Image 1 (tube, helix red, strand yellow):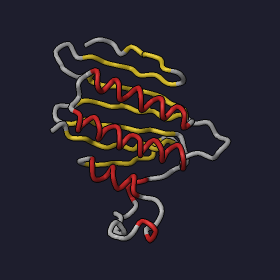
Image 2 (cartoon, one colour):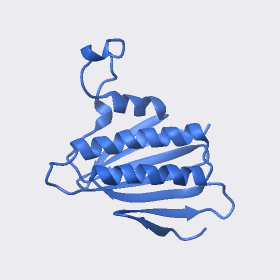
Image 3 (cartoon, helix red, strand yellow):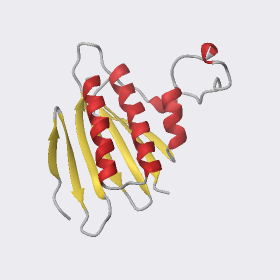
Image 4 (cartoon, helix red, strand yellow):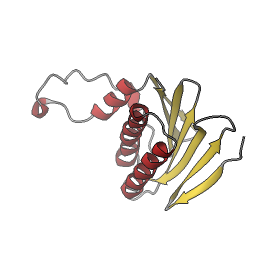
Length: 162
């Protein structure tokens, strides 16, 4: 196995660890700030990286949509306006799934404790604001998990490869 080598892109970086005999890298690791501009650049670059390794389109789309939701929530709700924060993203390829971890140093919050939306049948004007992004993550992922450790939120979700 090769050693992870960082590739820098603006204020964040990707680290790739390549298996000698595998189709996919075993991990992608990135650190971004809580600046929305960094999120957009990260998602564009991630999309290119997932295309390069020829990850199945449906799996790559699920990873990107779920990451967009999780990172957007962390950036929008996890930090007071004046605080600069750091968000780590790890994407790990396992035998039959991809495990995605989003770790932030924002305020304590477990996004997965919110009840499932029961207002999806209502007109958009009648629905309660919020929760749709996490609903999407919970439905695209095979499972989700939240932990709070050493003043950090660790949110994980698993995307099946098939």
